[in-house]
Each structure stands twice: as structure tokens, then as C-alpha cells.
Image (cartoon, rainbow, N blue to C red; front, top):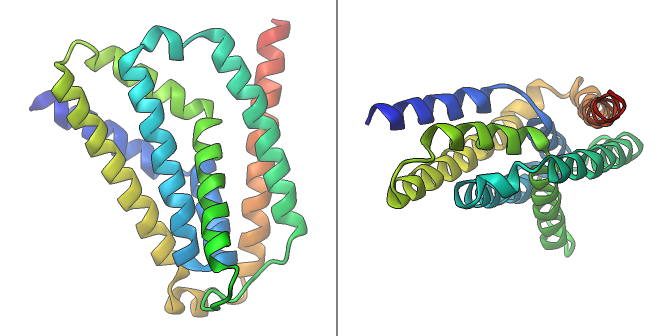
Length: 205
């Protein structure tokens, strides 16, 4: 029980720290509405579940320096590409719109969420560190930890999307929404550039 509490608290506190996934959710919520942003939320949670499964199954494989470097390289490039696309795209789209492209938008956001989650080395490093602590637990216990973290992550991300995408929130933040949208794109570019610089310094060093 004590171990579960420690795992749950560590995971939740990690969720409270804004990162790549948070800004992706912010941007998709502002531009596509919270309903379409749930695609990104589910994609991110699915990616995290995949990493958790891989880490708990074979920590040696997933923590390979070569794999982590590849993730950092492609992840940095992906974030710069997406951040640039966000900066160049329209700042706002009516979140209540209904059109034939809404389903496609949800699927696209789902794909972005999976890609963002899988190509974020911070996620891998966090779960590798966690697995090193609880790796001796029984398989059913590890499964329980994985299900718990997936559920909490998905619930938290959807909460963020709904809170930011509600009519009341959008009405109160009407003047700053375009700036928030651009800022989210800018943060993604900074995160991506930071990942590439960190990789380059590590390679040179």
C-alpha cells in the first residue's frame, strides 16, 4: 500500500508540471474545441500506456542509450515541426462548429497525441526511473500501477481540455486566446530545440 501511494503521488505531481503534452492539449483545445482535443488526450494516454508496458516488460531495452537518442532526435524535430505549424495556422476556430471534417480532426489530434507521447524522452525517463523502484513487484501489481496511471493521466488531460475549452473559459479569455495559441506553438518549438541541443551537447561531450 505504501508503495502504491508513493507511485500515485510521484505520477500525479509529474502531471502537474507543464510539459510538451500539456501545451499540445492547450493548443488543440483552443483551436479545435475540447471535444476534438479529447483525441489528443487519448493519444497521449495511449502512448504513455505503451511506454509503461514496454518499461515494465523490459527496462533494459527501453532505456537503451541508442533508443533514447533516437527518440530525442525525432522528438525534437517533430515538436519543432508541429510548433511551427501551430504558429502559422489560424489562431482560433469555432469550438462549437459541426462539420464533415470534425471526425477527421479528432483522429488527427489522436495521432498527434500518440506521436507526442512516444517521442517525448522525458516520459520514457520518468517511467524508467519508476520501474527501477517498483520493478520487483508482482506482475498483477505492475498491471494495476499501469492501469491506474493511464486512467489518472487520461482523466487529468480531459479535465484540462474541458476547463480550457468551456464556453465560460473561452468567453473570459477571449482577448488572450490568440496569444495563448501562439505561445503554445512557441513552447513546443522551444521544447523541441532544447531536446536537439541537449542531444548535440551529449553527443559532442
